[in-house]
Length: 568
Image (cartoon, rainbow, N blue to C red; front, side, top):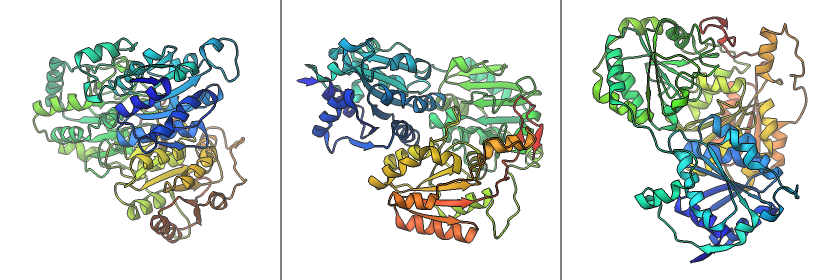
C-alpha cells in the first residue's frame, strides 16, 4: 500500500511495539503530528512543557521498562533543545530513538527559518544518526535505528527527516518485528547501519582463564556496573557473586544490579563510596569489574586503584577495555551471557576472613537522629519504610543523588533512574514522568534538590495534565549543596553564587499547577505527607527542610587514592 512518509514513521513505530511517544510539535514535524490523528488509541503521545523534558521522559521510559524510548521534536531550537537529553542517554547507554524533522530539502543549507545541522551537532553524542532525504529509504532507516539503539552497548540514535519526505508517498510493506532479523530483512536493514550492531560473543578461553583466577584468589571484590543493569543481568550477577563469595561494590549506574540489602553488598564505590567498598578495592587481590567504565568518579587515581589486585574487566564495548584502567585480563561480551557462562564453570568459594575484614568498615554513612530536624538518611529511610518496596526512584544530580544511592537500597535493574555519566541537573522529573508512563502500576518518586528542581519544575504541568502521579521530594538546603560542599572543603568557605535564598515557594508552585504539596521539617510531618501523597494518587510535592551545611559523606577528592577520605 502507498503511504506518506509521516504515516510510514508511525507504522514503523507500531512494528517495533511502541506504545508511547514523548514530544513537542513545530512547523517541520507537523505532517507526522497530523498523521497521528489516524493512530489515536494505538500510540499515546505525551506533550511535555519543553523538548528537554520530552528527551528525559523518553530516557526514563526506556531505563525503567527495558524498551527503546521514542521522542519527537521539530527543527532548529526544537532539535537543539534535545541535545542535553541525547547526551545524557549516550553517556549512560540508554536506547532512545529521537526523530526530528528538518526544513524541506530545497531549503537545506540556506539558513532557512528554524534550520539547523542537527546531524553534525549530535554526531559526538549519538551511537548513530541519519538524515533521510528519500521517502523509499525511510522505513528501513527507522528499523536500523531501533536495531542499533538496543543492540550491543545500547545508546541513542537520531533520525532527521526533511519535511518534504514526510509528505511524499511510496509503497510500504509492514514487516513484523520478529522477522527483522531474518536473513533477507537483516541484510536490507544493514545497508542503512553505519555501525556494527551485533553483540560480541565471549571467548571461551577468556572465560576459563577467569575461572582459574577466581580459584586462586583469597580476597576477591566484584564491581556491579551499569552494564549489569542495562543487560538486565541481575539474576546472573547475584548467582556469580554468591558462588565466589565475594563482597560487591556498586557503581552509581550499577544500583539495582545487585540487591542493596544482600549481605554481600559493601555499598557504593568511588568519590562518595562507602568505607567498606573503597577499603575492599584497595585491599583485594582480584578485582572483577562487570559493565563498569572505570570513570574518574570510581577510579579517581588510576595509578593506585586496586593497587594489590589483578584487575579483570568484563564489558560489551571493546573500546572501554584498558581505556581508563590497565587490566590484567578482560572479557568482551554481554554481561548476562558472560555471567551465565561463568556460573556454569565456577565452583563455590568461601572467603570468611576477607569478608570479616571488608565488613568491619561502614557500608553507609551513619547520622545522628534528631527529632526536630531532618537528616538525609531519615528522609530516605522514611520513604523506604512507607512506600512500596518496588518503588521506582528518579533523581536529579547533586547531594540528594548521592544520598539516594547510599541509603535507598535498590532491589532490581531499572528501579533507579539517574544521570551518572553526564550529570544532568533537570533530568529527574522528566525521567520520572516517562517511568510512570511505562510502569503505571508502580509508585514512582522523584528525588531532587532545590537547585535541580528549578531546572525542570515546568514539567509539573505535564504531570498534572496527564494525571501522572509522581511524588517529588525536594532536599531543600537553600543552596547548590554539592558545589557548596566543595567550597567548604577546598575553597575556604568562599560561597560564590551558590546560595539559593530566594523563591519560589515550592508548595505554592505545585498548587499553581493544580497539584498538592507539603512543607516538612521532621519525621512525623514527612510520614504524614508521604501517606497523604500515596492515598491521593496524583502529583505531589514534598519540600523537605535540611541543614544548609549537610554534607555527603564519605568523600574522596578527585585524583586522590580511593582510601584518602576528606570526610568520613
